[in-house]
Image (tube, rainbow, N blue to C red):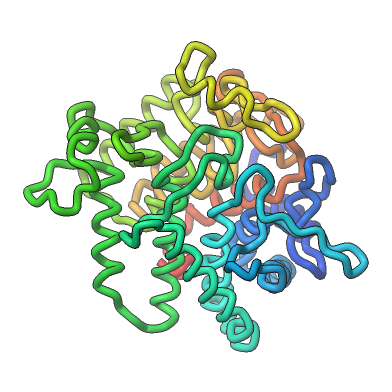
Length: 400
């Protein structure tokens, strides 16, 4: 296999183009497990890859995705998790076991980035009502009006993993979408600025003189005492989940410019991952949950089709190219380009001797390709990696 990132990138764009339909971007060309549908999350992530690549076919697919998702928005403002349109009939899902919070956040990000990159005024105007409904819905699920959205168990992309509460991932997406909305409206919002500062200090606790913004003092102090090298994955009343969340940390790195101390902490954590995994690759969640861990009870029966979360697989320590690529963009936003290059080199070295076909994930122990193939998610990850190497232009396209 040609180990060039350029070849992988071109193959990724071809894969993404093949997913583009008149109704939007499909998650995969393979129908298994409902992937041959327009998924809110997948289609918008694929569309963002198209925006970075300035690829007209993929961007058109993003436009159709946004229109389809808006068309089937629930009266309560909920954006569908996925839609299958066949001969005029639509099979719409707003989430099976529970609703998906990140459909609305990705939708807002997707619409705003589409408009910022295309200036398609007609489509923008037609989608503004759906954005306003989405923003109102997200405000509602703050539950207490204090700025953070509260995600139920199985309520986002990691729908078979035990994470819930005030999650890093969902709240970082919310911040990104709001910042893009304010940018387009040419507005500033002091309350938004306060929320962004509060989110930073609570999800990566540091010693501060003024503790008015601390969510809950004792759990905050507990994290300080243990010391962490990355953002926490979620906050619940009474405790923090200190596991590493690749998607959440990637989005946090895009939302924030880290301090020099935090950058050094991230470097150190990546070195630990490399020493543990043998390559500088980024697992979805880490450390893994094993059968003797108390979280295993929350993990073992939570699945829709089959149990995939054995240790080092799927959400449970699997290495997803999509989040690794997004993480590379976040690293570049914080001038950690050396680490970006190492991640890309190590990723290429792992897939070089295997039958790479845009697999969903890589196992976190033996580094074997696994999951569904021909995934737009994974193709997008490679596009993100490539554009992390030239971040100045990418930064503008991402609205940063």
